Image 1: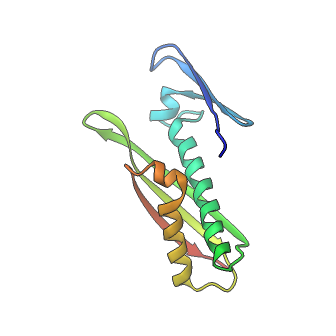
Image 2: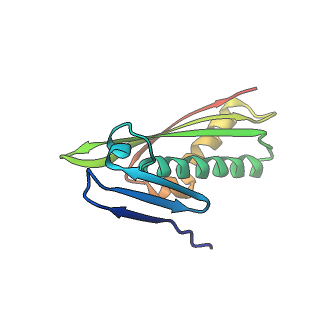
Image 3: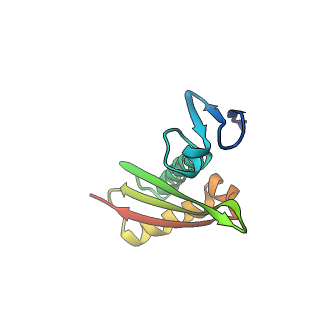
Length: 140
């Protein structure tokens, strides 16, 4: 299997400093304010959400294909909730929001496969200590 890499640099103190995160063709700045407030830039939780959304979409596509369904489109958002536990920043929950176009599948079968993808995608498995919820919907 492949080894994937990402890189980050941080310069300065926590609140006044800044950094750059890079992976593949993505490079983005991050700061204390972009992580804990609503300032411009990215943050680790946003990138984790993107990884989780992408992993779930691929896992769902795999499960659908194995069962004989060809998805036309799978759109996934991940809402990563960063909060405090005992005064320390922690990822509290991740909510996966999925809309999919899958011809010929029943809602029951789709939900079964979506739940399996939520439990089985590698990013979900890596995040086993975080509560992960799923809202999945078939669209025409």
